[in-house]
Image (cartoon, rainbow, N blue to C red; front, top):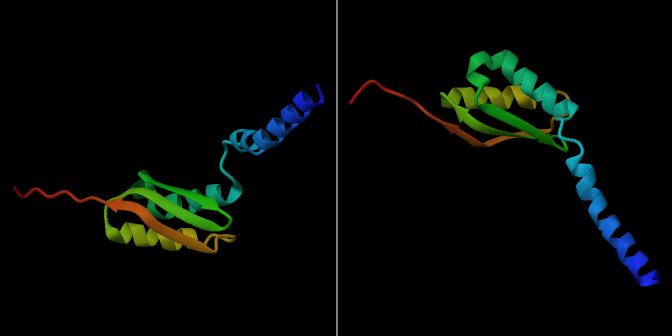
Length: 100
């Protein structure tokens, strides 16, 4: 019986970090502030961009219309207090033309 209880305690201890991680699906304050700053500056051009912040490092992802939009988004996010670095390697750009 002691072995069963010890095994159960170990299993519960190993599962606790995953349960805590899954229990908080809401973005933290830095991520929310970074998204708001990007939306305020880029407006509609930010609709296909996402940002996540982990330990002060912002990661941008998604699609942008112009390379300049990516630069502006990265700069604006990097200026949010508490963000130490901003990367945009996950952002792709797209363009359209009417030439055939």
